[in-house]
Image (tube, rainbow, N blue to C red):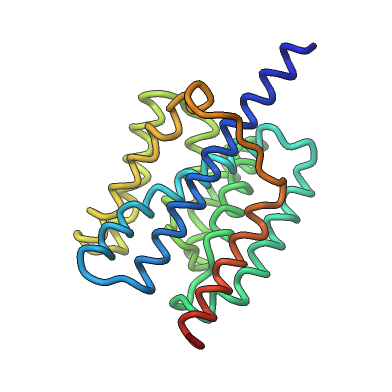
Length: 221
């Protein structure tokens, strides 16, 4: 029993380290987008490409280990709705990233219940609502949930090419930096870093909170 507790604590610490890296790279990305220019902005945006895959990975982990999927869906839906109130003020008209993650979570569930309902959801959803990262964003949690190793890498690249229809060549080049998230996910962080424990609702507070700070700075300072 003690060994199981240590293993669970180690896994939880690793996941929180990845979550912290995701939050940090997302913040760098948004700072670059709103406050920097030239090469500094490009560098920040490249670093920021790591954020979404890390969050997509956590959706897969969350689905696998949650004790109550309905409550998980409700929490993520609440985050998406609350964040949209601020997100709509500072970004172009589209749904925020929490909606993409929610769609990815529902896609895993649909796939697990019936593979064809999952296929139907992934085909229809981006046509009905404009979610950030489109097919790439919706499929990535499922890729992390179902695949490992080289299969995961190949599927990741296939998903990434789904952005071709809506981005320029230069934008796709920037997006390709997101593949660097894979070694970050695979790395054995808990061997080299002290254990990290984040509050359960850390991201649920941080995401809309940092959007609000950006809104205040860009409009009033």
